[in-house]
Image (cartoon, rainbow, N blue to C red; front, side, top):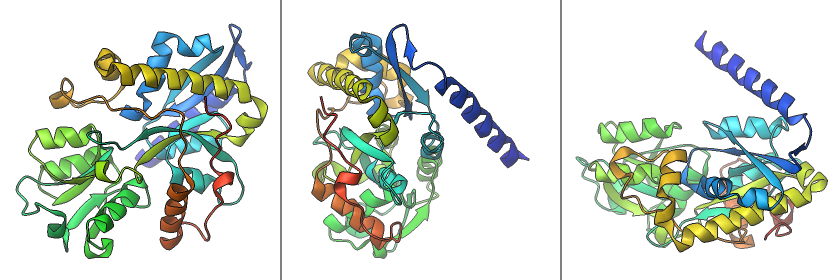
Length: 318
């Protein structure tokens, strides 16, 4: 009964959004653009641009469609309810396995020195203190996602074959956090700022992606249909996003209140978590894309690699 209820709720949500999407493409003289956003730190430039009026200055009415999971986000894109989304390269590839329907237009966030995106953590009572200690141990991850991809690449970069660990699928990030803190799983991979909160609560940092930033990238992707029908509103959206990123990078502490209002930041780090640097006017390069393709084909997630230009474009960069 619970499953049916949830499905019904999803269908209702999609129906309402679809009706809204079918309304006029203009609101108060501004072009409407709808973007699915998870409540994660990567989306901060959107909310800064919204509150500072940067979208309005570009003639765009940007609407955030809040989603609780990547699955919900992908359903909205498949239904044609949204123009764009914040996602990662492998999600874009999944959309394009048969034909190019979605393209990456800009990097939203990337790992950087002192500002990792993902951290591999061990329980405070575990005997894991270094990567080599993970051999034969269980690691809580989300299978076939950027979490598993980054985990594999970080282990390899530090001399451990991913086949030497036992991957435990724990898709829900809060559950992964709780199982680590309750010592029910020896190690997990978590995104910031939740990973930072786990460390503040006693978890041990084994490794993070700040030393290998090329693997951890979130992106803004838009449907090819929106690109063809409304290219100017996408350009306006990205100009506003980029301006917000520049403002955040210039004075990150000025935007802590917006972050705490819009992003899920655990209470024990809400005043200390360092607002990260946001990339500007970049797309993933061909080497990054090919590495994702290699990982996905080796995992059997794709039959063969997809071409770079079919899934990533520089055409809309500010």
